[in-house]
Image (cartoon, rainbow, N blue to C red; front, side, top):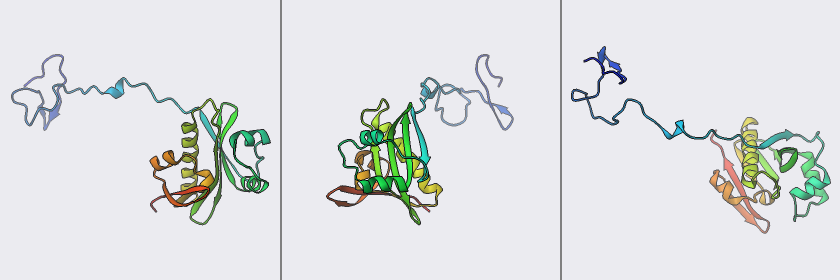
Amino acid sequence: MPARAGRRAGRIGGKPLNPGANWPGTVVAASLVVDSNLDHAAPAQPSRVKLRVIGPDAACLSPADLGRLFRGRSLTPARRARILNGGRVLAACGTRTVGLAAYERTDRELRVHEFAVDATAACPSDEIAASLLDALEMACLAGGGRRLVLLPRAASAGDLLRARGFVPIAGDSAGSWFEKIFAS
């Protein structure tokens, strides 16, 4: 059977396909062309949050940046030293630093002891936190780690963490510890 003009016809086993009375099987769609909403969807916008991973040899943030990121929290000299002596992921929105995750790597895990997001940033706080968590998960896996632990002060975004597969593992007066275990 020849295909009618204006219709697409395929072939199975050398025989032309033409939907109609002699069409084998159950007709699922009236057209051989499927129009999806993806064809009309707006393209995903790239995140405005840019990340940098730095080590202990890099300069730390200015006291003003640290004060803004840790607003309302005590940043003792011991905490500053821990931030300086470990790895850090910095998030920026434009030219402004809007997030920090400080971590230490152990044998098979990455421990995040500081996690701070600037609530006054032009970029949404959830986007900043999600970007930092993406970078931490990649750093954990790239270093051969199978467990990512966020310590109490670092676990300020509990709902976001749970949605990303983190589970609380312990709690104390400072809050809950969260972990995410990756398959080996």
